[in-house]
Image (cartoon, rainbow, N blue to C red; front, side, top):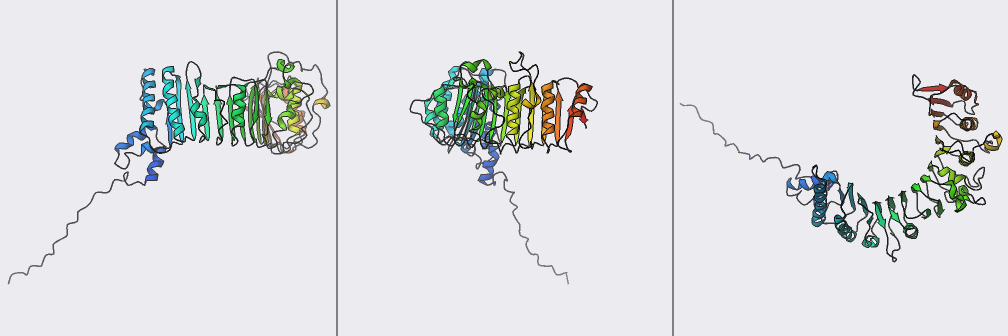
Length: 447
């Protein structure tokens, strides 16, 4: 008999489906998150990835336009035109809300394109824009169109090289939380109405703002303030929430005869700090300390700055008034932890430079020990007043851990010997003399 053949069971043929496209299967919120990390030019290119990605880019809520959106070429005019066309194209096809719009161009743009920017701003105000940043250069100032002043959805506004002339009906931005003006021109009344008309304003930066000489700020919720420029004075009103203040202000002492800051009966120090009860960090640059020292200068403030933990001062050590102003702040800051000082000298002699002075008249002991832990003094010339200031800090700072001193020129043995002789209230205090001429770039000075 022949062999019995086995019944063969037909094998099922399984059609292997290719793995689905992972990019196409991404959840919508993940795609949205990916697009936020891309520049506009690259975000638009993702439309070719799949049908799901095709219209995703035109719902981006945050739009940033700069020259990186355009391929690098030498012709600046062509780049400018292409950049403006890209902005037009994106705004035309965009759907959904626009939360943020930023336009940067570091090169000078032609005035013929300003009508395009006017049109963008009008479109954005109708889209309930929350954050607007404009930074570009033109031959003159760019005048902000009136339509922006009716945009009550704004939370953050940053303008560069612009002119602000709000209409007489303007009553402020009721939701604005941060305002950054850089190289902007605005009239005194318009500026004051703008600040007081923003009741929720928390952050304010004024960098070389033109059009007024006196800064008057009334902002009950303001927490951060930075000022850089040349002004006759500063007035605070209802700024009790200010916690961080950075002031780089040039003040001409010769103006004292024509403004309130120079009145012998007034005190700039008291006037300013009466409205800063919650100050935590204070940076004073240029010669603003001279402004604070003008008028009647108290030994210490009547109300101490109990929250102040960081203080940075630029001091002219040829000026006893400035030194006294700095000492007033030190005596009035019971919880100060970090102190930074930059020493500088005016080209001309100060009228307050003494031929001789009494230690006790200037460096009298504070009522409470100074609690500072870290001190850095940069730009030391080795003058007697500088050394007496260092001596004061070492003598009345029992919690001091480290003091770093940086000279303008190489140290002298006499100077180091003088520092060694200074008494220290803190047994843990380490005094370090940083000098590039030394073998290790620094020298630890022990008692």
